[in-house]
Image 1 (cartoon, rainbow, N blue to C red):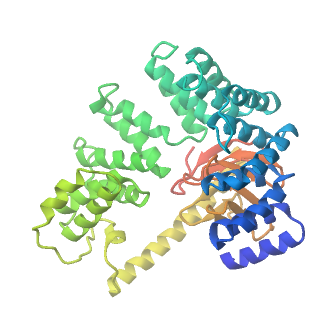
Image 2 (image 1 turned 180 degrees about the horizontal axis):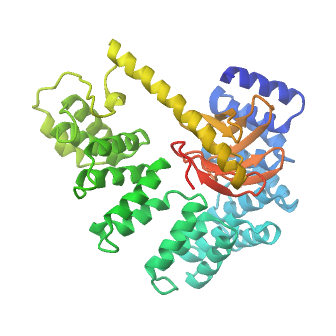
Image 3 (image 1 turned 90 degrees about the vertical axis):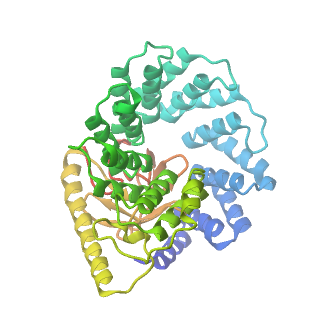
Length: 455
């Protein structure tokens, strides 16, 4: 189903009274149609009884600095919190903690809100929020014992950010004795519970240059796990080890592929390393056009050292555009219509379909034992369920639309929350990494950043 048809179907459901469809349309007006005030007014009305609408409304008015709506939005949020709506209570705590919506910062009220969410829902976000308040000691006196206790309670309900925080405290010896083994245990728990970026922390612990555990293979293993989840800096470090590691690990062709994938994900370091690679011609065929292109992006993204290499290219005669058949650099080349290039594009499409089919088969097997409902593959913009059915995902407007059942779910990219309109439950999800989520248990179980499922 095309996006226009999906919007048409959502409009139809909105006319039938589906509040979630109405929320999706209102967000769409603000983000894509330029009808900002119209969309906000619709969300204001919807928010009176719906915390999802209110949550999105808060994000919109703060992002666009629509101060004329601040008082009304706060009053609605406060009313929903009094009705014991979980997300509203957490949002209210965040408003007091940050001093947003023109409210004075009040850390005491913020903590009270988070404690209320804990009392009613044992909310992992609330445990983490209070722990972070005491850990950083920005608005209260720092109390690492209290921080550790709240992080520990968050970990007990499987909240990955809390597990990550405990790992850091063991690694740094904060409140607890320094213990690298325990740090590794908690980083691994955080990874398993959905916080895939901690693969970078684990890889760094084993990286020989850091003089801690000095295990090149283990470092590569964790960087590779993070890379499979499209964690950009894990891909950069994976490429670095494959480029500079010992002989039995070195793989320069694969290192370039890692840098390319990281660059597509927006990593400044990846663009920088690609620029140097094309400039020097040691890892790939020398090409000053591609060298300049990547270095210019790196500089734009804040890598000041790129200036040095760009200056070296000033007097260099530019090479003709070429295709390096030893690597997958076609994404960085000028457009071409040669038969050979068209053949390669067709082969890539075939590989993509094989990859997607493989994931369907893997997910069916995994779902039988894990209860996973499916996974998000953001690279192709779809949600794939345990039966292999694909559903449109719009990470911009925040809705997941199933054109088979007509069901609508909402995804909040800022707080990584999915709201299931059937079960009325919130679930943690990160569309960037494609976390598998279980609507029955409310837990993430697997991840598929590049759509390759792993335990």
